[in-house]
Image (cartoon, rainbow, N blue to C red; front, side, top):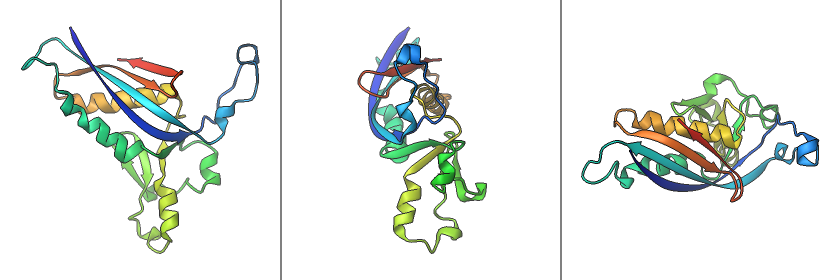
Length: 178
């Protein structure tokens, strides 16, 4: 069995609105992750294969689709759970017709919808800065989400995603092994 790993980076924000801390372990009962905040994320994608073709499992250049997805969809965006009560406060919980629904399991506000035609660009920028998902954007959930997106994209190649490791900070990470 062969394995290769490629690393990706992006800046993002999120909020963990439903976490309960256990004071006995954490030393406090207040979850600071309930606040809007940001991170410098790092993703390690490990692929596995049983055979080499032209001396490799899969050319690293073929993984540029991951970088493109990150750059276009996640970098400098705020990932927010559509069920987070903050969506109402931020005026993000709109009629479903106002969203683009992406195959990758997230939504963005459809700024091409005629309802937005007359709004100032500053509001369009505001709406464009959010990625709405249907899960609490914890390190673990983001890790599994990215795993599913990458594995789905590679499904016809014969290449399997072995794992995705997601560093929320330089000291804290989660890993999903398929």
